[in-house]
Amino acid sequence: MDLADLLVWIVTLSCLGYSLRGAWLDRENMGGWLWICPPVLVLTLAGHFSGRRHWLIAGEIAWGVLVVGPTLLAVVYMRCQTRQRYAAARRVAQVMRVLHPGDGWRELPEFMRALDLAHEGHGEEALAILQRHQNVRTANGLSATSMLYRVTHRWEEFNEWRKEHLPEPFLTRHPGFLPVVLRAFGETGDLNALLAWFHQFEGKIEQLPADLRGFCRLSVYAFCGRPARVERLFRGAISALPADVQTFWLATAQLAEGRTEDARRALEALTAAPDRLLRTAVARRQARPLADPEQTLSEASRAILAQVEAAHDQEERFGAQPGLWTRRARVTQGLIAANLILFGLEVANGGSTNPRSLLQLGALSYPLVRHGEWWRLGASLFLHLGWVHLTMNLLALWWLGPYVESVLGRRRYLAVYLLAGLASSGAALAKMAALEPDELLVGASGSIMGLVGATAAIAWRGWRGERARPASRRLLFVGIVMASEIVFDLFTPQVSLTAHLAGAAGGFLCASLLRHHVD
Image (tube, rainbow, N blue to C red; front, side, top):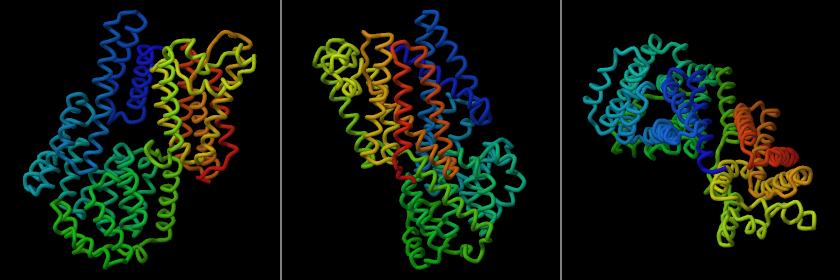
């Protein structure tokens, strides 16, 4: 498969994914994708199957500008907002409202300007901007009003306004309002309502992006006096929060827990913070006592709090995505390096698409294995046919490897990787013997499909043993990957479906028999 064919597959899958999500899961916030993705997909496929190269190129350019670009910009926007870099978030939103004017981006640059002004100490100008949208009955207008209450810390008034303007059916459709709603309950001391609402909307909260999910949990942990849990959030989902803001929330949790002196010292140090909104929040926290969780929480609320903590634990174990450049991914780093080194030897030895070079370095060949060269079953796992093949497999290893390694541990992870690869090579060899004795086979994809199978085994154990919803989401992810891989293999004669399925089965079986760190 060359780069052009691969790009057509990527365009097809991404456009279908966004269209389905916009049609069935989040039409109000992603409806714009329904106007963009189908025409891009039709143009690309029409160019591909008709041979009209200019159509194909036009479709791929449109995909890059209207699909890839906004996807990346949305990630940048959320990071800027979490880090309270509102000027940068405003610039990103200005681009996004041009590319996707129908998905709620139109007013966001103005809202980000208001927040930036408020943080710089220009409160009156910020309030004037937000007040202009206060009577608009769209989601963005309601967002402006909620920001208005938030920047002025009028939480009691917000609660009264919420009863009329943010009813429960609206929050079901727009769960992005839940972080501020939950915080308002905590700020006004209604801890039982805070936990009851979190429990009621738990399914919607789980569908939010990781940082918004983190903000929902932050209100629960801080106002219920769980500083250790707050610190865990700062090491994970909302690690991008500025240090002063983290200090504020940790002090809030310490106050609720009863560690008054530690909290007061931390808050006193924040009275000189450059962030004007933070100083206002600090003044409120110093002037108003928080509700005492020990005296306030009912038995039902305590049970919900325990469930929230248990769900958080499960998300860290089954939903986390460790980075490649961490100590938990040393074997994955080594495997990537090994593949790159062997690819360099291919290039130096005559080229990565040269059959003679591949044979010399260990490509899987039935006649040679039959004559005793069994080492090729393992060596072929580290060779690749061209840089596109290499890039695809290394990106997949980058994505899948760190999680499986963090769960199984280094030795067991390496064993699964190699055994799944050998299962893949063995199945491919059997097929060669029966149908294609002169074929050559190279690639790490059998081992990588083994990691897909191992991920399924880990998630299945978590779902079967704990009914962990993050584990069920991973199972769904594995199902989508497997379905996409089967379709891809059936329409791509250069790849071996047999080898891929054998690798996935081998990885699932091996990981099922091994001990997991998440047990």
